[in-house]
Length: 120
Length: 289
Image (tube, rainbow over the protein chains, first blue to last red):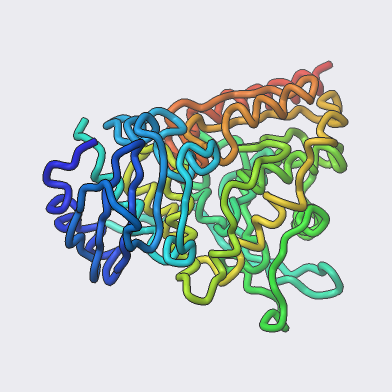
């Protein structure tokens, strides 16, 4: 899982700049015991805060095991590990919170999560 | 100027369905055995651009693909503004057969992907004699519901963009970037509520898990080709379906996902050609015999 330079990578991604412009949301990633709170405003990641948190303010959360997220973040994910919706099917990642907000910003969210992958 | 004119032609055909006239757009290329192609949910005929422009296919086959009503360039019939598109097994089969009749297609090979792959199983069950062979891409008798497509029609969600985002991970990450994004562009151009309406057939009404065992592949050969990266219709889903159908032939396609014909046309054609050659050889052997 590649958090080094994550914010810069996302904010300099030309695809996100065009396809995710104006997205604003806050997502909690639960990766086993570890939690990260990502705040996106006007199409840019403005902060990534490390947990643990007590009753954090977020729009929605993606909660999964550290093993599932590690597979997702592989530079070459195996079939079935390449997308969070694959984990929705296997229930390895659960969506909680405001589903409308999740869908409204799904394009940005998915493009952003790709930057957690290490370079091949 | 170095212009390129493709061999693909597009036309409209009018035919009756449900007491109304449908104006249906279709594209075709090539000559020979008709190969009727069915697009995925929420998309249109452009998914088959690679096949329509592949001489290795069109030298032997007349490739034909049509946009379902409400999709692509097949506008909804008059009065659509007071209706909601909701695809059912019966409607889907009637539209395919109606199109075939309108174009006077005689025993085509039918090949459909995703919802098109599902309806191929309906065709194999109820209309097998009308086809020379049936090829289901990303085809399974049923799949579990793991997301609710109703959100794609929510007034506070940009449905076509959210729809594209929903399906983007279904493709192999290594498929060519330009082809993956063109596949998503098709989804971004879908009509409001149409993708969700198609998924009613795919997720709810069109479950065939209790029926596919009645498919008789001695009447018409059935091939099921599934990309390994598809988690909507996974390789296991296809293999489970095939296990219920004696004689069904399965081919798992490495390096491909849910949209093989559009996410990586060249790789898909390499997988498809042996199947088409087998169908032709069996047909010629039948004539000779």
